Length: 456
Image 1 (cartoon, rainbow, N blue to C red):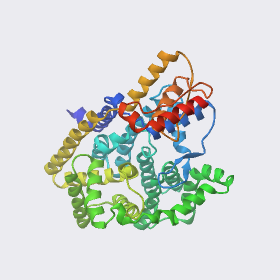
Image 2 (cartoon, rainbow, N blue to C red):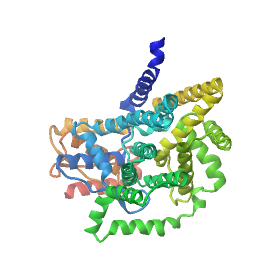
Image 3 (cartoon, one colour):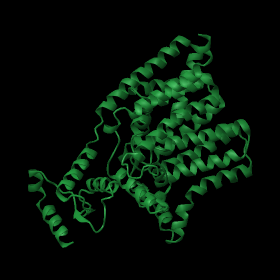
Image 4 (cartoon, rainbow, N blue to C red):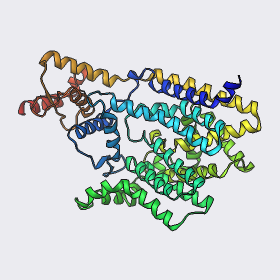
């Protein structure tokens, strides 16, 4: 018993990591997300890797006609390099990073307040419904949680060691996150909050912070320098003019709805469980703030979250759940602190509340896991099998007519590319509507597809 008590932290960390692995990889074949964006990005990374090319630009932003840096493709290439012809390789890599996130948040929480706080934060991250769902999707929002956590670690380490190099690393984390997905721009509030709370930073430190934030954007600057700065001009045009064509009212951004409905729901989804938890956690946060139960590190995180909430409220674009990934480590660490303080003040109540949140979240997790079905992959695999039956070992060139069925064609292209059967000189094929109802409703598309294939 003394041995177990001495090593309880190690046992706890191992148990939490095993739970995280199980929840992310259980029934994985039915859960990995495969749609247009994922297939498109995996294809580009595969081509770049095999042809020794480095993508300087990433996917187009959903907000406007501009692109961020190519670092997202670099991540996929890194996940593909050891098994370039295995379709699942980049997905497995991204899911593995989701497990790394759990281990990393334990380490960061340990640096903030010790072992008990670290285990609570790790457990919440391991069972987080939002993290489990996001961890199986090859989208450029997924790595944001790990990059945000890296920024938090840089902030914590700088505060404790007072070494200026960590400000450079903090800037790199912010720049990298924003170049992978623009939601990462919100991390700029972390150093701002740090300065407001600690009021200690030198001009040299600010310079290193800015330098670090700029470095990941150099690929974009290189391409734009060669192309009349078209990408940056479009970005400025969107943020200064175009985004305001959509009023906030049309996006449902009334403060009452935004704070009273949207955020309790999002917070509870990130932690896991029902929206009721969101309201309880928000109320408990306000109560703890009045009682001054927060240490300075958590105050910085809270202030940063408040700034991020205001920023998102005034962003003139629809906000999807996946856009919140960069805030996951902030909310997980804050929630873990609330439970940690409750355990210190009222041990039995704190333990019961932790078990309640974890138990209800696990129920929610298994509902989500069992409901997921990757039908797009099954359909594409069936198509490849049929092509092999009919044409043997031939190669194929996949076309889409006016972007018709482009999502299905991209998935088919990915599977063919992984089998080394994609060739611009191969048999020309496309995916079209094939039901009796679709034949009646879409005769023009049928005819145009056939004409298009015959012409080429």
